Image (cartoon, rainbow, N blue to C red):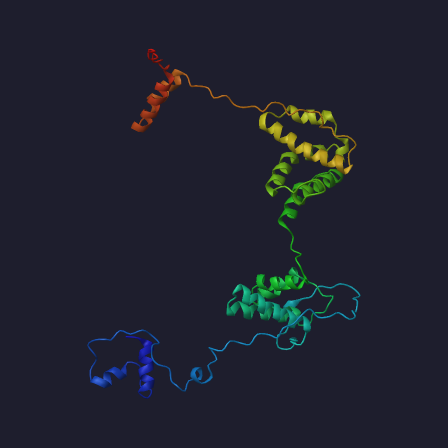
Length: 341
Protein backbone atom coordinates (compact mmCIF):
# COMPACT_ATOMS: atom_id res chain seq x y z
CA UNK A 1 0.00 0.00 0.00
CA UNK A 2 2.88 2.41 0.75
CA UNK A 3 6.00 2.62 -1.40
CA UNK A 4 8.08 3.76 1.57
CA UNK A 5 7.01 0.74 3.62
CA UNK A 6 7.59 -1.60 0.67
CA UNK A 7 11.09 -0.24 0.17
CA UNK A 8 11.86 -0.66 3.87
CA UNK A 9 10.63 -4.32 3.90
CA UNK A 10 12.54 -5.15 0.70
CA UNK A 11 15.80 -3.88 2.23
CA UNK A 12 15.14 -5.80 5.45
CA UNK A 13 14.49 -9.01 3.47
CA UNK A 14 17.81 -8.84 1.66
CA UNK A 15 17.11 -6.66 -1.31
CA UNK A 16 14.02 -8.36 -2.71
CA UNK A 17 11.84 -6.41 -5.14
CA UNK A 18 9.24 -4.12 -3.63
CA UNK A 19 5.91 -5.93 -3.09
CA UNK A 20 7.44 -9.42 -2.92
CA UNK A 21 7.92 -9.55 0.85
CA UNK A 22 4.22 -9.77 1.75
CA UNK A 23 3.67 -12.46 -0.89
CA UNK A 24 6.55 -14.66 0.43
CA UNK A 25 5.40 -14.43 4.03
CA UNK A 26 1.90 -15.92 3.50
CA UNK A 27 2.22 -17.55 0.12
CA UNK A 28 -0.52 -15.38 -1.29
CA UNK A 29 -1.48 -11.75 -1.29
CA UNK A 30 -2.82 -10.42 2.00
CA UNK A 31 -6.58 -9.71 2.02
CA UNK A 32 -6.10 -6.60 4.18
CA UNK A 33 -3.60 -3.85 4.97
CA UNK A 34 -2.73 -2.43 8.38
CA UNK A 35 -2.77 1.41 8.24
CA UNK A 36 0.26 3.17 9.69
CA UNK A 37 1.98 6.55 9.70
CA UNK A 38 4.95 7.01 7.40
CA UNK A 39 8.47 7.18 8.91
CA UNK A 40 7.35 5.81 12.29
CA UNK A 41 9.92 3.01 12.26
CA UNK A 42 12.68 3.12 14.82
CA UNK A 43 15.98 4.46 13.62
CA UNK A 44 18.97 2.24 13.72
CA UNK A 45 21.02 2.78 16.91
CA UNK A 46 24.20 2.91 14.85
CA UNK A 47 22.94 5.71 12.60
CA UNK A 48 24.94 8.96 12.40
CA UNK A 49 22.09 10.84 14.07
CA UNK A 50 22.39 8.79 17.28
CA UNK A 51 26.16 8.62 17.15
CA UNK A 52 26.96 12.32 16.52
CA UNK A 53 23.76 14.14 17.47
CA UNK A 54 24.46 16.94 14.93
CA UNK A 55 20.79 17.93 14.74
CA UNK A 56 20.49 18.60 18.45
CA UNK A 57 23.69 20.66 18.86
CA UNK A 58 23.38 24.22 17.46
CA UNK A 59 26.18 25.85 15.53
CA UNK A 60 28.46 27.92 17.81
CA UNK A 61 27.94 31.69 17.53
CA UNK A 62 30.62 33.89 15.97
CA UNK A 63 33.10 35.48 18.39
CA UNK A 64 32.23 38.98 19.65
CA UNK A 65 33.60 41.78 17.47
CA UNK A 66 33.55 45.57 17.48
CA UNK A 67 34.15 48.26 14.90
CA UNK A 68 37.75 48.04 13.65
CA UNK A 69 40.08 50.84 14.64
CA UNK A 70 41.29 53.16 11.89
CA UNK A 71 44.98 54.07 12.33
CA UNK A 72 45.83 55.43 8.90
CA UNK A 73 43.98 55.53 5.62
CA UNK A 74 45.17 55.35 2.03
CA UNK A 75 43.19 57.91 0.06
CA UNK A 76 41.78 56.99 -3.33
CA UNK A 77 42.76 58.59 -6.56
CA UNK A 78 39.18 58.45 -7.90
CA UNK A 79 35.85 56.83 -6.98
CA UNK A 80 34.78 53.71 -8.84
CA UNK A 81 31.80 51.46 -8.36
CA UNK A 82 32.36 47.79 -7.65
CA UNK A 83 30.77 44.86 -9.46
CA UNK A 84 29.87 42.18 -6.91
CA UNK A 85 28.44 39.95 -9.63
CA UNK A 86 32.06 38.99 -10.53
CA UNK A 87 32.86 37.84 -6.98
CA UNK A 88 34.29 34.31 -6.90
CA UNK A 89 33.17 32.56 -3.70
CA UNK A 90 35.83 29.88 -4.10
CA UNK A 91 38.83 32.22 -4.31
CA UNK A 92 37.89 35.75 -3.12
CA UNK A 93 36.54 34.95 0.36
CA UNK A 94 38.49 36.58 3.20
CA UNK A 95 37.04 35.55 6.58
CA UNK A 96 39.89 37.32 8.39
CA UNK A 97 38.66 40.75 7.32
CA UNK A 98 37.81 42.64 10.57
CA UNK A 99 34.86 44.41 8.92
CA UNK A 100 33.42 41.06 7.90
CA UNK A 101 33.88 39.63 11.40
CA UNK A 102 32.07 42.62 12.87
CA UNK A 103 29.23 42.24 10.35
CA UNK A 104 28.79 38.52 11.05
CA UNK A 105 28.58 39.20 14.78
CA UNK A 106 25.96 41.93 14.26
CA UNK A 107 23.97 39.65 11.95
CA UNK A 108 24.03 36.91 14.59
CA UNK A 109 22.73 39.26 17.29
CA UNK A 110 20.03 40.65 15.02
CA UNK A 111 18.95 37.17 13.99
CA UNK A 112 18.66 36.07 17.61
CA UNK A 113 16.61 39.16 18.50
CA UNK A 114 14.31 38.98 15.44
CA UNK A 115 13.97 35.20 15.26
CA UNK A 116 15.46 34.64 11.82
CA UNK A 117 15.09 31.17 10.40
CA UNK A 118 18.06 29.00 9.54
CA UNK A 119 17.75 29.71 5.82
CA UNK A 120 17.66 33.47 6.39
CA UNK A 121 20.74 33.30 8.63
CA UNK A 122 22.67 31.37 6.00
CA UNK A 123 21.61 33.77 3.21
CA UNK A 124 22.62 36.87 5.20
CA UNK A 125 25.99 35.31 6.08
CA UNK A 126 26.66 34.48 2.45
CA UNK A 127 25.68 37.98 1.33
CA UNK A 128 27.93 39.65 3.91
CA UNK A 129 30.87 37.49 2.84
CA UNK A 130 30.36 38.56 -0.79
CA UNK A 131 30.05 42.26 0.02
CA UNK A 132 32.61 42.70 2.83
CA UNK A 133 35.43 40.25 2.03
CA UNK A 134 37.54 43.06 0.52
CA UNK A 135 36.07 45.98 2.46
CA UNK A 136 38.21 48.80 3.80
CA UNK A 137 37.49 51.74 6.08
CA UNK A 138 36.77 54.19 3.23
CA UNK A 139 34.46 51.90 1.26
CA UNK A 140 30.74 52.64 1.10
CA UNK A 141 28.19 50.06 -0.02
CA UNK A 142 25.58 51.37 -2.47
CA UNK A 143 22.23 49.76 -3.13
CA UNK A 144 22.86 49.77 -6.88
CA UNK A 145 25.99 47.65 -6.28
CA UNK A 146 24.48 45.12 -3.88
CA UNK A 147 21.07 44.47 -5.44
CA UNK A 148 22.13 42.96 -8.83
CA UNK A 149 24.63 40.54 -7.27
CA UNK A 150 22.35 39.29 -4.48
CA UNK A 151 19.26 39.10 -6.66
CA UNK A 152 21.13 37.01 -9.23
CA UNK A 153 22.02 34.49 -6.50
CA UNK A 154 18.52 34.49 -5.00
CA UNK A 155 19.71 35.96 -1.69
CA UNK A 156 17.52 38.18 0.44
CA UNK A 157 18.48 41.84 0.21
CA UNK A 158 16.41 43.45 2.97
CA UNK A 159 17.97 41.57 5.90
CA UNK A 160 21.48 42.20 4.58
CA UNK A 161 20.81 45.92 4.25
CA UNK A 162 19.64 46.04 7.88
CA UNK A 163 23.06 44.84 9.01
CA UNK A 164 24.88 47.28 6.71
CA UNK A 165 22.75 50.18 7.96
CA UNK A 166 23.59 49.27 11.56
CA UNK A 167 27.27 49.39 10.61
CA UNK A 168 26.81 52.85 9.07
CA UNK A 169 28.30 52.05 5.67
CA UNK A 170 25.20 51.77 3.47
CA UNK A 171 23.95 54.44 1.04
CA UNK A 172 20.52 54.06 -0.55
CA UNK A 173 20.94 55.54 -4.03
CA UNK A 174 17.59 54.38 -5.40
CA UNK A 175 15.64 57.13 -7.22
CA UNK A 176 12.56 58.18 -5.29
CA UNK A 177 9.11 58.03 -6.84
CA UNK A 178 8.51 61.68 -5.94
CA UNK A 179 11.53 62.78 -7.99
CA UNK A 180 10.27 61.01 -11.10
CA UNK A 181 6.76 62.42 -10.66
CA UNK A 182 8.06 65.97 -10.11
CA UNK A 183 10.35 65.74 -13.14
CA UNK A 184 7.36 64.81 -15.31
CA UNK A 185 5.26 67.69 -13.94
CA UNK A 186 8.04 70.25 -14.47
CA UNK A 187 8.58 69.24 -18.08
CA UNK A 188 7.77 72.08 -20.45
CA UNK A 189 8.15 74.94 -17.96
CA UNK A 190 10.50 77.84 -18.51
CA UNK A 191 13.84 77.48 -16.67
CA UNK A 192 13.18 80.37 -14.27
CA UNK A 193 9.63 79.24 -13.48
CA UNK A 194 10.83 75.64 -13.16
CA UNK A 195 13.37 76.54 -10.44
CA UNK A 196 10.80 78.32 -8.28
CA UNK A 197 8.13 75.65 -8.70
CA UNK A 198 10.55 72.81 -7.95
CA UNK A 199 11.80 74.51 -4.79
CA UNK A 200 8.20 75.17 -3.72
CA UNK A 201 7.11 71.55 -4.26
CA UNK A 202 10.10 70.15 -2.36
CA UNK A 203 9.51 72.60 0.50
CA UNK A 204 5.91 71.40 0.77
CA UNK A 205 7.02 67.78 0.87
CA UNK A 206 10.15 67.96 3.04
CA UNK A 207 9.50 71.15 4.99
CA UNK A 208 11.52 74.33 5.24
CA UNK A 209 12.17 77.08 7.80
CA UNK A 210 8.73 78.06 9.12
CA UNK A 211 7.07 75.63 6.67
CA UNK A 212 5.71 72.33 7.95
CA UNK A 213 5.96 69.31 5.64
CA UNK A 214 2.66 68.49 4.00
CA UNK A 215 1.09 65.20 3.08
CA UNK A 216 2.30 63.93 -0.28
CA UNK A 217 -1.28 63.95 -1.58
CA UNK A 218 -1.53 67.67 -0.84
CA UNK A 219 1.59 68.30 -2.92
CA UNK A 220 0.14 66.30 -5.82
CA UNK A 221 -3.17 68.17 -5.71
CA UNK A 222 -1.68 71.66 -5.54
CA UNK A 223 0.80 70.94 -8.31
CA UNK A 224 -1.93 69.61 -10.60
CA UNK A 225 -4.07 72.70 -9.96
CA UNK A 226 -1.33 75.05 -11.19
CA UNK A 227 0.38 73.07 -13.94
CA UNK A 228 -1.82 74.14 -16.88
CA UNK A 229 -1.55 77.80 -15.89
CA UNK A 230 2.22 77.53 -15.41
CA UNK A 231 2.58 76.01 -18.87
CA UNK A 232 0.56 78.92 -20.31
CA UNK A 233 2.77 81.46 -18.53
CA UNK A 234 5.93 79.67 -19.69
CA UNK A 235 5.01 80.49 -23.29
CA UNK A 236 5.06 84.21 -22.45
CA UNK A 237 7.46 84.69 -19.53
CA UNK A 238 10.78 83.34 -18.28
CA UNK A 239 10.28 83.98 -14.54
CA UNK A 240 7.36 84.29 -12.15
CA UNK A 241 8.47 87.85 -11.38
CA UNK A 242 6.96 88.83 -14.75
CA UNK A 243 3.48 87.58 -13.83
CA UNK A 244 1.16 90.54 -13.14
CA UNK A 245 -2.17 90.99 -11.45
CA UNK A 246 -3.86 91.22 -14.86
CA UNK A 247 -2.54 87.74 -15.77
CA UNK A 248 -4.12 86.29 -12.62
CA UNK A 249 -7.39 88.11 -13.31
CA UNK A 250 -7.41 86.67 -16.84
CA UNK A 251 -7.02 83.15 -15.45
CA UNK A 252 -9.62 83.63 -12.72
CA UNK A 253 -12.24 85.00 -15.15
CA UNK A 254 -12.58 81.55 -16.70
CA UNK A 255 -13.02 79.77 -13.36
CA UNK A 256 -16.02 79.37 -11.11
CA UNK A 257 -16.89 77.68 -7.87
CA UNK A 258 -14.49 75.17 -6.46
CA UNK A 259 -12.03 75.51 -9.35
CA UNK A 260 -11.54 79.19 -8.56
CA UNK A 261 -11.06 78.70 -4.81
CA UNK A 262 -8.72 75.72 -5.22
CA UNK A 263 -6.58 77.61 -7.74
CA UNK A 264 -6.31 80.60 -5.42
CA UNK A 265 -5.19 78.42 -2.49
CA UNK A 266 -2.39 76.82 -4.54
CA UNK A 267 -1.35 80.13 -6.17
CA UNK A 268 -1.18 81.92 -2.82
CA UNK A 269 1.10 79.20 -1.47
CA UNK A 270 3.41 79.40 -4.52
CA UNK A 271 3.74 83.19 -4.66
CA UNK A 272 4.12 83.51 -0.88
CA UNK A 273 6.99 81.00 -1.03
CA UNK A 274 8.63 82.88 -3.90
CA UNK A 275 8.26 86.20 -2.06
CA UNK A 276 9.87 84.66 1.03
CA UNK A 277 12.62 83.23 -1.17
CA UNK A 278 13.05 86.72 -2.71
CA UNK A 279 12.74 85.47 -6.26
CA UNK A 280 9.89 87.97 -6.84
CA UNK A 281 9.59 91.57 -5.65
CA UNK A 282 5.87 91.70 -4.90
CA UNK A 283 3.09 89.19 -4.54
CA UNK A 284 0.65 89.71 -7.44
CA UNK A 285 -2.10 87.64 -5.84
CA UNK A 286 -2.16 89.65 -2.65
CA UNK A 287 -5.51 91.38 -2.15
CA UNK A 288 -7.49 89.08 -4.47
CA UNK A 289 -10.37 87.75 -2.44
CA UNK A 290 -11.53 84.21 -2.72
CA UNK A 291 -15.18 85.22 -2.39
CA UNK A 292 -18.06 83.40 -0.83
CA UNK A 293 -17.98 79.68 -1.16
CA UNK A 294 -20.80 78.70 -3.56
CA UNK A 295 -23.23 76.07 -2.46
CA UNK A 296 -25.86 74.40 -4.58
CA UNK A 297 -29.51 74.84 -3.59
CA UNK A 298 -31.66 71.73 -3.38
CA UNK A 299 -34.95 72.43 -5.16
CA UNK A 300 -38.07 70.35 -4.85
CA UNK A 301 -39.27 68.68 -8.08
CA UNK A 302 -42.43 69.86 -9.81
CA UNK A 303 -45.65 67.85 -9.70
CA UNK A 304 -45.33 67.03 -13.41
CA UNK A 305 -41.90 65.49 -12.81
CA UNK A 306 -43.31 63.38 -9.98
CA UNK A 307 -46.24 62.18 -12.12
CA UNK A 308 -43.93 61.18 -14.96
CA UNK A 309 -41.66 59.30 -12.53
CA UNK A 310 -44.68 57.47 -11.11
CA UNK A 311 -45.90 56.43 -14.55
CA UNK A 312 -42.41 55.23 -15.53
CA UNK A 313 -42.14 53.06 -12.40
CA UNK A 314 -42.54 49.40 -13.37
CA UNK A 315 -41.71 47.54 -10.14
CA UNK A 316 -43.62 47.69 -6.83
CA UNK A 317 -40.59 49.12 -5.03
CA UNK A 318 -40.25 51.93 -7.59
CA UNK A 319 -43.97 52.72 -7.30
CA UNK A 320 -43.67 52.89 -3.51
CA UNK A 321 -40.77 55.36 -3.75
CA UNK A 322 -42.65 57.50 -6.25
CA UNK A 323 -45.75 57.44 -4.03
CA UNK A 324 -43.60 58.55 -1.07
CA UNK A 325 -42.29 61.49 -3.12
CA UNK A 326 -45.85 62.44 -4.06
CA UNK A 327 -46.96 62.43 -0.44
CA UNK A 328 -43.99 64.54 0.58
CA UNK A 329 -45.13 67.10 -2.00
CA UNK A 330 -48.46 67.62 -0.19
CA UNK A 331 -48.59 70.30 2.53
CA UNK A 332 -48.65 69.03 6.09
CA UNK A 333 -51.79 69.53 8.11
CA UNK A 334 -51.50 71.41 11.33
CA UNK A 335 -53.02 69.58 14.30
CA UNK A 336 -54.89 71.79 16.76
CA UNK A 337 -53.17 72.36 20.06
CA UNK A 338 -54.79 70.77 23.12
CA UNK A 339 -56.91 73.11 25.14
CA UNK A 340 -55.25 74.51 28.23
CA UNK A 341 -56.72 73.35 31.49
